[in-house]
Amino acid sequence: MIAIASLPKAELHLHLEGSLEPETIMRLSERNGIALPFADADALRAAYEFDDLQTFLDLFYAGLTVMVTEQDFYEVTREYLEKAADDGVCHAEFHVSVQGHLGRGVSVDTMMSGISRAFEDGAAELGVGASMIFGLQRQRPLEEAEAAFEDFVKHPRWVALVSAIGMGGSEVGYPTAKFRPLYDRARALGWKTTVHAGEEGGPEAVREALDGLAPDRLDHGVRAFEDAELTQELIDSGMTLTVCPLSNLRLKVFDSIEAHPLAKMLRAGLKVTVNSDDPPYFGGYIGANFVAAQRGLGLSDDEIIQLARNSFSGAFLPEDQIGRYLAAFDRAIAGR
Ligand SMILES: [Zn+2]
Image (cartoon, rainbow, N blue to C red):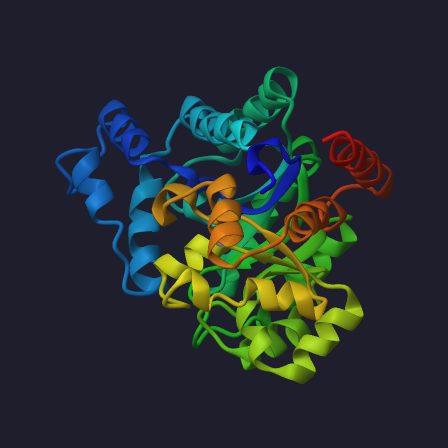
């Protein structure tokens, strides 16, 4: 069985605020004098038993309130990059909930100074490249998203760190189409586009997001597989799906790893990748997600290699950079 950590890979679906370890949340809450209803990291970790997406989101939004200073954003970003490096990640794309920070009075400069410093150190010291996905929350008002976008794009140096616009948050009951003007503005800036769909919602939610936003990539998308016609369209268009197996288990999208459709999706010809989403909340970083899929779904070495290769070809990077990553990947595989 191929050793997962030795396999070069990119992480395409990861939330900065979802990478907060319980110990980090407690450390930052003490440093910044922010009271949380948990006695210690163990008590917080014990709360990571979720009924569904909403119960997770409630804790996610409470947890991110401990991020206040430039140093906080640096440390949280850096801690993820160190774990990613151990897992063989060469490139990571961070969803950042800009609205979730601006709404608490944290400035764009504060959050981005810390994130960009960690990106520079991560590249220089850990060999992990990174970019940011400007993450919207679909359950929040359009006006709030527009205001955050306006505030952010005033800063060309931060705009340059962004590879895409994306959207997460509560899926059921919150269609995407009203956000189309912001997606079009993002495209005009040269950003790519992605959207969470087909996690909590079924194939109809994926259809709505595809029609509503015309995204370049689909986050999750696992429930699109319930619809054969939609699946064929995603295959024909070469759409990359950022699948997060442990997240799907923890949020009860599927009852067991054996019931997860990842292997069937790959074998059907969908361009799927493996990612961690919010690793401490869901019980594992990208390596653990690969291992769970490898063991639980009986993926062959060639299938594991295909999943990792897809992560580079589906990355939001310039074509020449993707070419270099793929050439290095193929050399690493040939030499194993
Ligand atoms: Zn996500």
